[in-house]
Image (cartoon, rainbow, N blue to C red; front, side, top):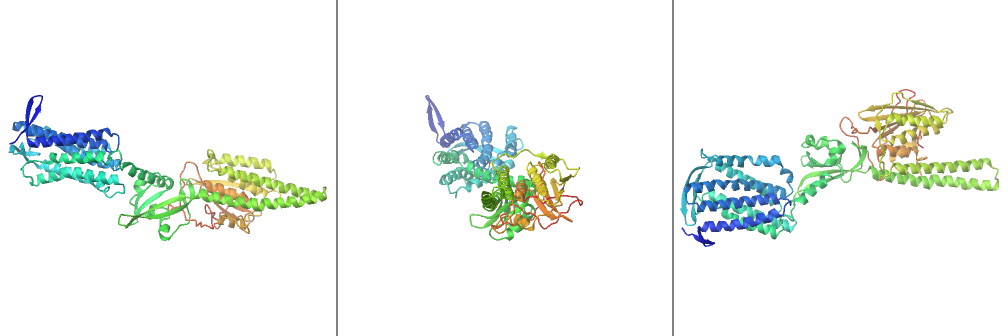
Amino acid sequence: MIYTPLVCNKLVIALSPLSVALLAAVVTGTSGAILAWRERPEAGATWLSLLLAGQVWWTTFLVFELEAPTLAAKALWYDVQWIGVVLIPIAWLLFAFEYTGRDRYVTPRVVTALLVVPLVTLVVVATGDSGGFLRADASVAESAVGSFLRVNPGPWYYLIAGYTYLLGLIGSVPILQLVRDDARPFRGQSAALLVGTAAPWASSILHLAGAIPVAGLDPTPLAFAVSGVAYLLALSRFRLLTFAPAPRRRARQLVFEHLHDPAFVVGTEGYLVDLNQSAVEIFGIDRRAAIGNPATEVVPRYNDLIAEDGGHSPLAIVGSNGRRPYEATVRNVTNAHARSIGQVVVFHDVGQYLGQQQRLDVLNRVFRHDVRTETNLIHGYADQLKADPTDERALSVVKQSATRILELSERTRTASELFDPVSEPPPPVPLDEIVDGVVSDLRSEFPCANVVVDPDLPTVSVPAVVHVIVEDLCSNAIQHNDTDAPSVWVTASVDDDWVELAVADDGPGIAESEYDVLQRGTETPLQHGSGIGLWIVKWAIDHIGGDVSFSARDPRGTNVTVSVPTVGAAPVADDDGRVDPVSINDADRAADAVDLSDSVGSPDPSASSSDAGR
């Protein structure tokens, strides 16, 4: 054998050529471990440090084994090397997960599971391996590069080798995905990392296959010199750890998960693959139970979405915010070969936009038509008053027109304040308190009116805006009644976390043209409402995700039935779990459906609703 003298403080130490080569691997590995350790807490820094430390440990004690003079000493240092051997594959796998942004797999439970086989191995080593599980036999082998311990492997040796290769392969998969990444630094990093891990793999496989010139010598620690250089290159040249893909992947996950709009991922076979947190919260879906089920059973209106080509009209869907109009977008997901591998379905709540557009259209009509009509009246009768100051009729018309303009102004201000998107909504109020307060005010303002309230009103809490709904329906039912003693009946019931409030009157009824305008959702110069009372009621109901329907009352009057969700309870859809779609196109800017066809009768002849809202 040839030995290289190492001079240290006049003490000459003769090292074998293999030991000198291994010391080079120790130097590069130690340098890389120090650099990686200094980058903590960057993603993967700790695990890369442990990986390199494991390589240094294995290599260092192989040098001790090579230089040991006896079989017993060599066997001792051989056993110590196992700490580094079992540490390397675990550190590599966890580094790959954390570095590529898959840190959800780096948990104490996963780490504990990964440590089971290595710990069993170390226990076998520590107890002397009397059963020959790791090494059935051992002897000292002399060669030109040094003397080493030749081992006949036991069954557990092959098991731990397979376990090491398996973890190494799994860890290499996410690194391989970066080879073709758009970012050049990531391509360089991944290439260096793959070289660093492939060199020891190849050496180990050649050793097990008996293809090494020096029989029985495991050259894997020698390959660590290549690993060390590759990792040092990745750390210095390609900014490994300081410029890692982990934030990018995690950010993309966060964008999907915390997207304000509900989103679903559907596979090519029509099964739900994933959904974000907004979908869970808004549509009340159990994520674990939903994933893997047919999309038609989970995604609202999925059959209608895939049947339509092009854009989709907003659909009214029941969710945690009540019944809201959603615009659905369906996009294909393709792989690198431009093949469709699924779809992403996103629901965007357009209720606020449609409501604002609707209010602008109506208020534009109010100022363009109603106010102009009243000012024309004032101007005309003002001329009569100028000619005849004693004309009482002209004076009365002027006062009435001015009063109507003032009322329109107050209602417009109410609508603006009520639906201000930046204002903080008031706290919920018990329904019975709302009705009692409104009825008390009506009886004071209209002593001739007969207002009957169901004595068994539910005490559930509802959004405070319900006060405006009840007040407008009841007051308009009285004001637009042509009898001397107008009657109004108010009832309410609770069903599946919904409150159904009914207001009935014995007035002349609401004109069909008013219904048509509400159903269409827009006004035209020739087709428009006679005021904004009904609009305010509808906007308030849409604002809280409710529904409203109108029907004629026999023998005279109108029934108005309002359904709103109770506060703190998720609204419940129909038996099939969804709500029928409401078609709203560019010409039909309705924020929700107003059911005008279904007749909702009163509980009794003196039951509910109102002619209100003109």
